[in-house]
Length: 342
Ligand SMILES: Cc1cc2nc3c(=O)[nH]c(=O)nc-3n(C[C@H](O)[C@H](O)[C@H](O)COP(=O)(O)O)c2cc1C
Image 1 (cartoon, rainbow, N blue to C red):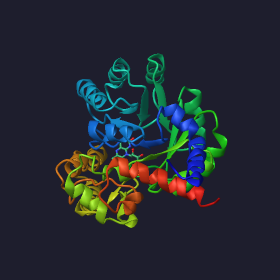
Image 2: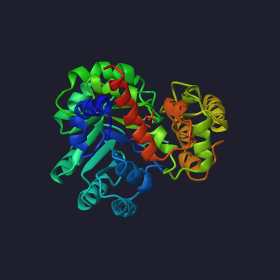
Image 3: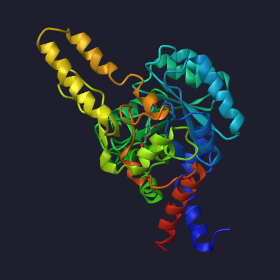
């Protein structure tokens, strides 16, 4: 039992994120952002069991592997969880079928505007559709075409990022998009910050980095240690050297790999200018540099040359915690902040 000022503050918090908890079917409107190689059965079920909402990252998995991952997650939790599918996946429709067949209630379509048939397949299958929107116009378009909820992810986030911070996206989108619940993501590490976005109209929050470093994450000890040591300023977006060879911005910890990436780009551009390689091949070489690099960091623990994707919130990873401890701490911080005003 919470003492009266905290009980009142907790009810206020519950009211603030009621739309999010109703949509997700959870106790708290805290989503665990899907992270390739990291968001598997253990982390996802731990987040859902802690009162949040775990999301499996399908990544490059095929239908059989995904079906097995969903079944294994269902064996570890009775609570709802979602599956994140990448729209470019060549077997997108089969993956949606797998989710629907397994009774997955929420599907996140990430990595671009989802194609119409995919949207229809999710909706016809009775699942709720969550999409990412990097701008208000796109958010409105996604809602019109069937998105049941939107995630706005600021450039503070780990992994693939857009150019705009959550501070600005939230101001541009939250006051103008009231038709569906909107979840905020990117750079969130404390409950007070989550509370501030709820008060601006967000339905809930999505975190990745803090959960990736948790005790329940299967990430290699080296990966978690790197998170523990890093400050916000160490989590930087990948750098593009030449506008002729675009690089998709990915935020991660600076290491030998990120330095080498610059050298490889410089060398590739030099070879292109010398006529030694075609533009297409040069672009492919640059794109292939990071192939398999996230797995190498997360699973093998190669944090020197692997891709150590992390958000700026990595500076708030300071101790070894379980998912339950992180979720409880976030809720406690938000509650204290409300109670402190009384
Ligand atoms: C290691 C790592 C891998 C990620 N992989 C994915 C992914 O596969 N798909 C996706 O939609 N987002 C991915 N993200 C983004 C997260 O889902 C989440 O939105 C983001 O981490 C939120 O920002 P935060 O890290 O500051 O909490 C990844 C993030 C990290 C840190």
